[in-house]
Amino acid sequence: MGILYNSVKLQKNMKQEFILERLLALGITKSQTGKSIHECDYEELKYELVLASFREIDDNNDSGKWF
Image (cartoon, rainbow, N blue to C red; front, top):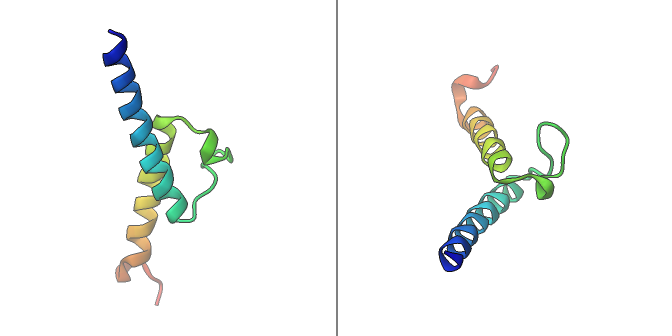
């Protein structure tokens, strides 16, 4: 059981690091609650990435611009 647990934990850490790197690349350093993204858990990071993705889509969409 120890090896399987460590493997799952390593995989989750890798996913968390990937999301963290994506957020940093987008210039996001704080969550919506004001907490540093370095302190966020995996679920919080996923939520922040979804919000950032929506903002990125809105910024790239001409219909979302005023003029």
